[in-house]
Each structure stands twice: as C-alpha cells, then as structure tokens.
Length: 277
Image 1 (cartoon, rainbow, N blue to C red):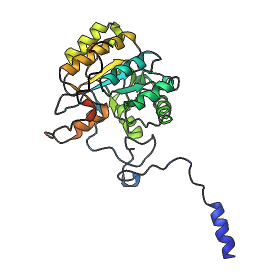
Image 2 (image 1 turned 30 degrees about the vertical axis):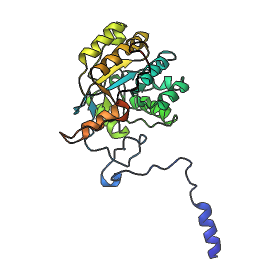
Image 3 (image 1 turned 120 degrees about the vertical axis):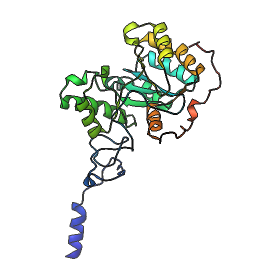
Image 4 (image 1 turned 90 degrees about the vertical axis):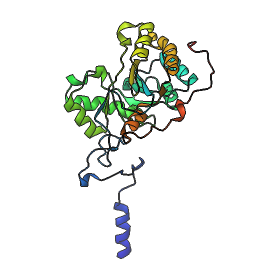
C-alpha cells in the first residue's frame, strides 16, 4: 500500500518547467517588494531595483567625460548596418531603442547589434504616442516589444516612449510592473525634422556635455551621414562613449567617487580615416 501511494504521488507531481528558472534577487514580494529587477521579464514580482535607480533619466551626473549615444526607431535595412560599421571602426558602444515590429523583420541586423556589444532597449511595438493610450494598450505595446527582444536572447532593462510622450503616472506604473526606468534625452538635434547631416552634426557637437544622453534616429539616411563627423568630433573633444545602463550606474555611485574607465571607451586603434565613413 505504501509503495502504491509513493507511485501515485510521483505521478501527480507537476512536471518541471521547460523555461529556465530566474533566481530571485533581493527581498521577495512577501516582504513588500513587488518590483522586478531590471534584468527580469515583466510581471516577475521577485527582486528589487538597484539602489539609486531613478524613474526617469534625461542625463546623468558623472565624474568624467562620459556620454551615451542612443539610436531610435530601427533597425533599418541599410542605415543600421552602415551605422554599425561606423561604430565598430571607432570601438564605440551605443544603446539602440528598437521598435518591436521592426526587430522581427530584421533579425539578422538585430543579432549583429548584439554581437557587436551594443545595448538593446524597448521602444514599443508600433511606435504610438503612449500618453494617449489606455494602460492596457501601453502594456500590450511594451510586452510585445519586450518579448521580441527576449526571443533574441536579450532581456531589455529600460524603455523610451516614442516622441518622449509619457505621463508621470505612466512612468510610475511602468517602473513598478516592468522594472523599466524611462529614458529620455538631453541632446536632440531634431534630425528627424531637418534631415540635414550638417545640422545634426553641429547641434550634437555644440550641445553635448558630460553625462549627456544623445538622441539620433537610425532610420534616416541623413542622420547616418552625419555620424562620421559627429563621432570623430566628440572623440576629439575627449568624450568617452558608454551605454545608457553604464551611464546610469555611474550616476548611482556615491558623490565624488571616480567613475571607473570602461574598456570600450579607450582610444581605439585607428583603422579608418576620420570622417571617411
């Protein structure tokens, strides 16, 4: 009889999940923490946010000439590969806020972005104005885009609202539910409006300060045309490029603590003629 009961218990036991388990980080939800860690999927209610992480960022106070280049709305079939060539030649890492519907259209380009060491972040599924949508519609936009990136092996840790349109209330519940801080920008050359490579370059070079988050759109040819002179000009000014998450981490350090140098921001070996591509 005892043997029969053991057999029945084993048969009724739940099967192990096919998906990998995420080890909880920090206090559990039962302890009053209901926000996911930045590297966990939406609706995972275990873990906590890194101390000091803010709900929203336009720039970061840093000790040193560190800046973050960000590229929105891609990937683009021809522009993004050109941009990746430029960044690779200069040993620069950037953050790409990709649109979900485009990530599934260009998986090869997405895999190259990952292989080149860049950071991927959520820019919604269809690029709507989130401040005009219901909570459920916003949730759907972010979840679909999040899942598209997870399917590529990347769990995004932040998002940027299209057009920068987001309310304070939305920022809060998105942080609570997704663990996403809202990433805006401090330098906007309005490349999408002017379609002028010269204006894009001059505005970025004139407006960039340490801790800046720079906004560019890699879906416009003129924006990519502006990048050689822009990147070379920023390097000549002594700026060092980091990903947005790295910039945020620098801002979380105690005031006065030196920012540790990052390997990618060291001056690269020159394998190109500045401004050539």
